[in-house]
Image (cartoon, rainbow, N blue to C red; front, side, top):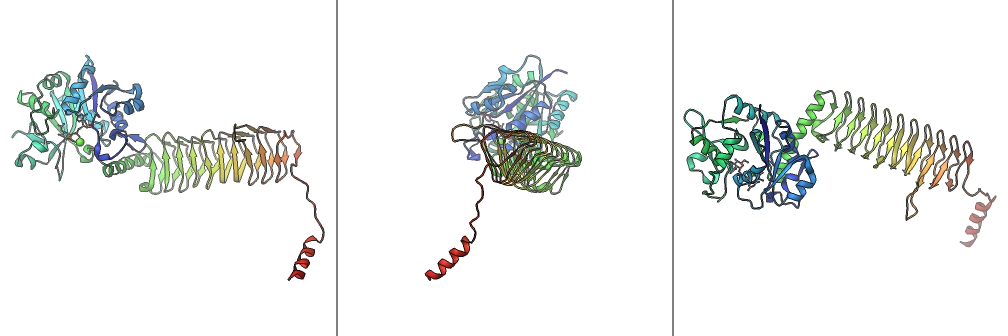
Length: 461
Ligand code: UD1
Ligand code: CA
């Protein structure tokens, strides 16, 4: 089989998004619309897709780098013109050219594959994807001959009353034999209501020449949905979310309420993990097996080992080892690396720190730029004082250390293995192994002081 080149049309401005961001760079389930198109393209071709860009060129190239080839359409003269701008990039060995629009995030690779199979097995010059809609307003209509073969496409604005009654629409997804595409492109004119070079006219030219053109009617018309505004973005996002969640459920993940569980496309989740509503898993999260995600957490690019429990917490670029518990209300920031059987309790913030196996940090604590050894106990209200207003410093705590409540460790500082820090201490100097550090002023009691004061007050009145 010959090679397939994929062309993604993405030069449109997308003015109806009312956005400073290019339409195709808007995201659904953690992936831009163009990213979804690239993903579908990967399913039918090993070649890098060709993306036709316009004013959005820099943003698109920055996002996709050398994962794509780019063609610039400086002036927006229609879909046919967009393809003309890319034809130099088509490879000599390409047999088929698949063309799709960059704003159809629900289109699946399987459907593109079916389109290619149709062209090959039926020896067609081209095939297009169509859908039958209750309300076809605005779309190009697929015109068929009496024998059902495709005759051409007429744009809504150019269509007669009778043509507008046709409910089969052109989805703007095609598979052409490359030679047929190039020959028909050279014949395009802009002799129409919009003064544009219509790619759709290529289909008409081929059919008029007696070449065979097919149409694949999408089983699920939603796949052909184009996103033009934010309402459609949300609608398409919900469909993608449903697909993602269903795949996780079918591979052994329990979602208590899939309608209220937000899992990005890239996230991986192990079997027998249970996810309660209101969890948002973004980016490249990897969740182990047998985890329980109680309600209300947001995790970005974070990794959980097996058997981890998280509740009402925020994890950003954090790693948590097997059988540890996090939350409620913990904040694990980038560079957090938590071992196994660790307990991170309520209102604990960790940043750029390693916490070894078996250590407990149960409440109201800040661990920043530090290392805590194994089996330590960190008392309530401990602060790693890592910042002096100018620079950040490291705190090093050994294994089996007990840090009493309300202690401050002023970095840079070291606490040796097995040491004990008395509650309320402010530690500024190294604590040797197995030592007790008490760093607070000694208590003095003044006998009878309070009673005398009360008596004095009474006299005044
Ligand atoms: C197009 C089809 C129409 C189909 C509809 C489906 C044509 C002439 N019409 O119409 O039959 O029913 O899609 O949604 O093709 N683009 C460029 N450069 C351009 C013009 C468009 O890159 O000069 C890109 C857009 O960014 C978009 C895609 O091509 O991704 C489709 O363009 P759009 O203007 O939305 O075409 P429609 O008028 O919707
Ligand atoms: Ca469109």
